[in-house]
Image (cartoon, rainbow over all chains, first blue to last red; front, top):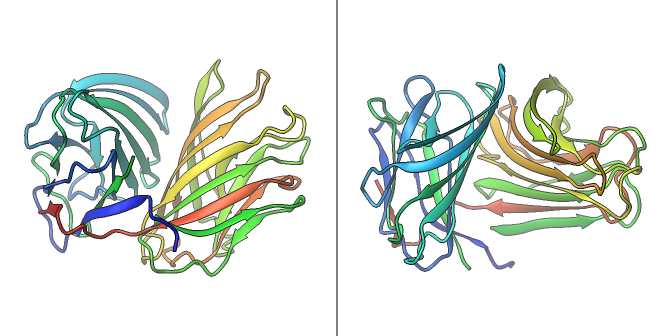
Length: 157
Length: 173
């Protein structure tokens, strides 16, 4: 059997709506983390909080978005580079060197939302030298929908 | 991530196909390295389960170092992007890496994809794309193919399965 390179850490599929999901007690024995989610929420396409270590903090990020009206790029510093959708899609969050204690944590987010015709890529940074031990997805005043799935993987370095 | 199959072409071929994909994983991850023998087209496309209906949606964001643009289509196959064709720099192959989420479930299939078409000339591309297959059947067959011509010898494709689970330490609530 081939040696796996993605180690499954935890997974969740919601049977009913929920205000948020949190991955906790993430071991610091890997180099990178990858979170794959279908990002389903109960209402509209919305910005969704990405919270590391239980503290909502501004995350500097840069975006390139292709959609029906064309191509745009933007930048911001806020806690919501992730998106929730009601249709079909996949959102992949890749966090590099999440367990390092001597650097900030860069991340890449790829949003592939075919139902609403978006190709959306974000590069950002968690401005903390603390290792990441928890990740929360919280769609503000909306809820994660029944059928929401998220799976967290560790990548060894 | 578990290796399912690796294929490398010993000679030119019209497509690379993975059949009888095991239904035991959560997601699929595919990496291809291809060169197109056509002199007129660099386009690479993908189909699932030999479905030739107009069930494939693609949106691309791509740049060539001079400009960036977006493109969308609904077609009988996915438009993955462009890879080197025979008139481009010799011995140069382009790469695509893509993730297919929940490929074995009865849902529409979302695909996240990145493609690079390298060329030691003014025409080279980086392409980010999102795709949706509206068919809710589990994916058992995956085919990648050039729009014109064949994939050149030494083109390759590698398919992995990704399985969700728990390490017994990380919790989710």
